Image (cartoon, rainbow, N blue to C red; front, side, top):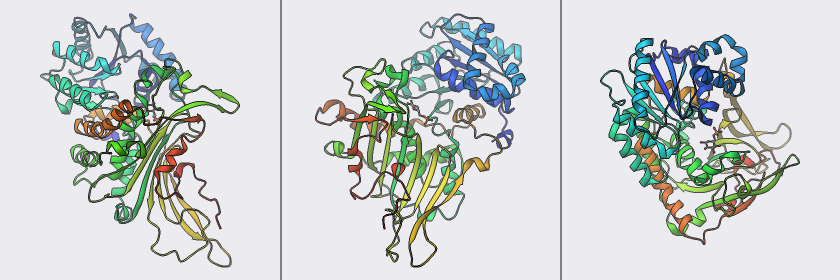
Length: 510
Ligand code: BG6
């Protein structure tokens, strides 16, 4: 990445982080900025203005950040103590109560005079690391003081997920943001798109001649996308209980991954062309009729469990979660992309918290060979798979049958397994590093466009509404540290099929 990005010049600029004292900024944004600094990828003249409601001076702010970096960017801090000290010096702080319009006058003065002092043009990124209900308030206040004006220097806004709570609220939010900012100034972040391995799906498909010919309904039997998490909601119960797995993971991350897996090749590799292709996939998602929702979409919620002798609390016992909560912590669903390439190929996607392992992967199941000449096969799966592993151990595996040496023709499935880490001289960049840098250089390819966000809300909204309004749709409870409700297996029409991420591939069936 270093070599590649060095060729792209990020103009001098400042970054204002609203909500700098929050969890996201401490755990992800500031560590990502430190790493970019260490790698020499930040613009030559650059400053971060942290903005929060707490009163504190620069010195206190910097020493607090130092502590957080020691925790969340330990490797960089230990390896590069001098660079870390230099990095802290480009951090500034301005107290702003986001609800009070007049305080933005102070922020404007502060930011613009900082630009002048550091001889940085008024190129500014505003990062909204704040609760979603504050997005429009902050955007409005920025507009009130013409801080959106590009008369001298460009202005960009990065908006965190969730982007809206439904189709309607997403459109509303877009309209409000568009009052002050044009679409090319708005960067809707989806950190899954910033993952190297998600981007690599495009390279795998479009830089090679041999994947793409089979990447369609003629050869693909089904596609599986799993994002299983080992952790529960922890201390995010307050947010999660109003969100649930559908809004938290599926509407954004997994549907974006699906779009990258299913998209057509763009005519040219630029932001608009790529996003034109992914949005077409999202617009082609076949709506699930009300009558089929309980059959095609399985929701679950974790109950108590045990992991390594330790008790895991039930979701309903988590902090800030309603004791009778009906929020789903697990979703598995079957869906279709109604277009020429994918017509009638089922896509199975699932995500859940407190499952036994953390794994994020896409499995392309190819159709079996037209005739099974070799009857003895050491696996329940006589077909080939292409496994795109996003986490852990990012890479690609191609699974195919080979003859077991010796008499007869016993076939065993083996793997050609590529580990992405073999390709990188240094560590693979974190999603936030990549995304922040892209915004700095004005590349929005890996950010979600308004039409894509709206298309995915359009698809999930009817499901969420039906769950809310129809008490007959079950919420299945599953024990923590298990693979979720058994009913999710029922999504496969062929009862011999199983979710790949929980299969032991080499179980001998002969
Ligand atoms: C976040 C969700 O967007 O993604 C979390 O809010 C989830 O609930 C996280 O745990 C998963 O991201 P990753 O990168 O750890 O797979």
